[in-house]
Length: 203
Image 1 (cartoon, one colour):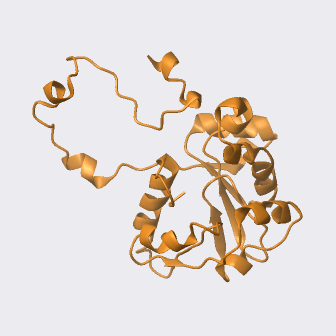
Image 2 (tube, one colour; image 1 turned 120 degrees about the vertical axis):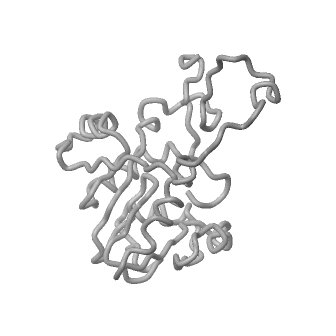
């Protein structure tokens, strides 16, 4: 999620790495499950975060992972904990697995998501079976995941995204309404422009 056009999940992963990288006695390594985009990983990482990626196409990994191989340690090296930040937790050799599931649009709105997101219909179930910890961003989503996959809600960790420090010192921009041609009252939606966001309902 750090590569390419940065979405909310990419921002979430970036800020989490920046917040955790100074933790004593811990080190972090990022890996990219892509052949074409792996060269961009170094420039996408916060300082102090290592990287290790083998040049293996994702299209090849997906069917192999369904068979339970290769373990993720072959791609990123030995790790104690592997966090699948974006719906996918590969097979593990000895690492403990953490899986983040952000929403269930791939199941409930499959006709409005990309082909890559539709793959989550199989990869999430596989990842949940491998994970020692499942993470999501809200109690509402934890309840949905538990109901959809018949899990104990108590076993899902709710870790809401934090608030970046710059928000606490942000100042209003003078005359922004006039500059943008906005009325005094307006509605702002921050996110990608996709059918699954259901902006007509928001409006």
